[in-house]
Length: 113
Length: 111
Image 1 (cartoon, chains in turn cyan, orange):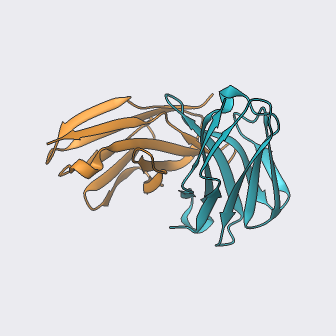
Image 2 (spheres, chains in turn yellow, cyan):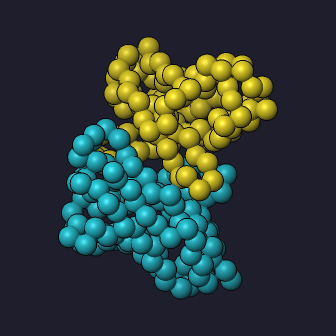
Image 3 (cartoon, rainbow over the protein chains, first blue to last red):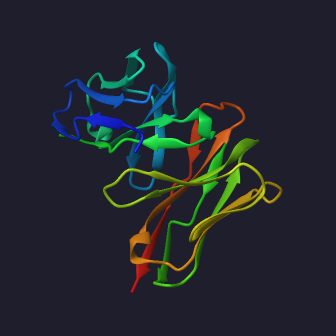
């Protein structure tokens, strides 16, 4: 357990509405990541952060934005949700003391109608 | 480009040994990791090979051969609870902050 929580855990929303997912960590890790997981695609990186206010895009960043104003919180925003963004979203932290090891939060299931 | 290929599904019976392969096409990377994910759960870290060779952790072993662009996860004395999806992952030399995941192998263990 790396002290990672995600909220909400489940959400149903309508197309065109904004949605914000929150990832919270308690261990002061520098690196935080947002992934989405869909059948047949494994885990795909949306955005990641390497420090407060330092973020970069992943492979599927279109339609998503992120913010990190505090070390412990990494927010993922869908500005205008679409049905293609229905997915399971995982947040992760990287323990740099353990090289490439990432620890994942419990996930958020998002359904966009 | 960079990609990691895994078989989509593997089946085995309790007590057996199963090997999940991961072949990759990438210009260079820092080690190979393996993650386990049960249905409805989050991925959890299993093992990491920084160097070529075999790493053993209990019933699980992981192997890496950079010269063959190949790695595998070996699960011994299979138990029903090992039924899960398994992902290999690498951290690219081109961007060391990111992990690249394979598409995953679903292991089903039968009694």
